[in-house]
Image 1 (cartoon, helix red, strand yellow):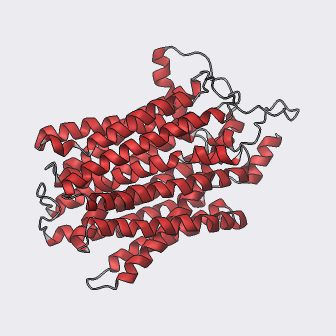
Image 2 (cartoon, rainbow, N blue to C red):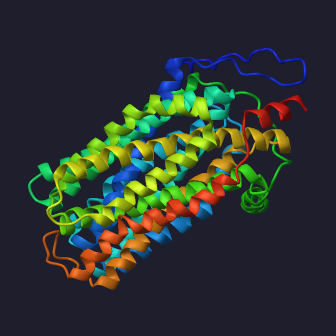
Image 3 (cartoon, rainbow, N blue to C red):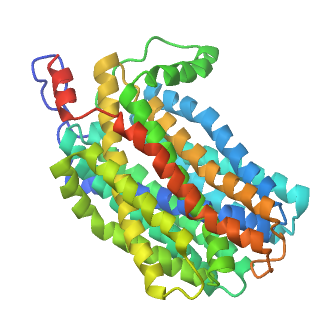
Length: 473
């Protein structure tokens, strides 16, 4: 069967620009559904990777946090290369789709294998080596799929307001994935006999399911536009190609709106990764709750986020992306800081209220960031005359990975300082210092990251008026 033809391109506007015909609702929703898979795996990995290594593989918390950091730094090295390759790819499927296929297959398999490591009976150095190898493979696969995927929105939704609509679909599926990764995954672990067996089943089900959905996105993306891209600046040999992504990365950082948004995103995702890495310890050691209660908490968190998406769309339309982002990130930080005031015997409804409010505020910040990213890509294209969306999404994904490593690394250092006892499973008694530092890790540390994002976001000035003037010029 031949591949379906891509949508036709509309006529130019007389100024030499080729406009892409509007993409239908079904195509937008199907593309956005890929965020379910990446959201589920990202959150499950952020939630449980450190915990599994310290509880079942006997790896010290500082070493486990360092392993995650090393994997993410490696990811940062390859992210610009993958982005530049996707920008330069000329293929009958378009510049991005081949990467969706390769990434989908490797992503699910590496995730499933990581959570099944305990079945091999490895401990100590062999366990640390195997965990490092699988996290490197997982990071590679995640980047191969995600970077080209993130580079597609400017062509799917070329208009300023259309991007908010497209990204609201993506946020919906991302939150559904968050629910699967942070609520469904703990519930599945709790439902399967022993915790160790539960993590193995969870890794297999979630990994293979996510791979299947990514493949659906790959096949459906045949219907998306494949407009003519601005040509890359000349042919490159292999050596120059290896160097060019880092040169391109340096150049796109000259784009002030992109640079500021990227740094804000670093702070925002460091908040999430710190909280997720601390959560299994916080719920089990401080709150005295089981894995199932983690699922219930994040279920409320995600439902509140999903329900709030239409509200945030209207607020953004009324007050603007940047202004809404500023207010929501303050509320997000205050909600997280409230965990520092938790005391034994606190009413259960306060836990549920935190889940709802923090979930809604977190979702609003996410929608703002995703709606602003394609604006910075268009700004770069108008300013430079080149198509560097792949490099930019590579940088954005690199920041996502660095932030994802900061949380476990910081939490690992806190647990090491407190004297965490490893290798005995989740019910092992722990020193009071560990409990105190875990409470700091879910409250004060992420609130400080929110505070650090405010001056960066205040300096961001890109809006529809700026883009309209640049288009006219």
